[in-house]
Image (cartoon, rainbow, N blue to C red; front, side):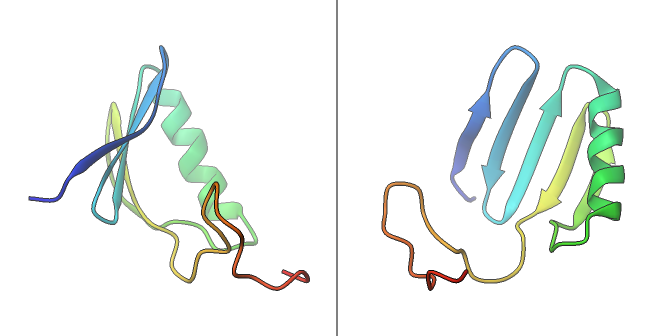
Length: 80
């Protein structure tokens, strides 16, 4: 079993990370529908939607190499 990390939590949504999967639990099911549509339209790399069973949306991590980690110097070039 992977460790469960609370990424963000407030009165409207909680986002949990389990391995490479992010689970977004939202009080308003319409928010997940808007997010799914946005992911489909975005012209940049976006996380794959794994499944959606209201009130939970499961997405994978964005493929590729991270440009940085909060609190640490970025390994990316200045042009990135």
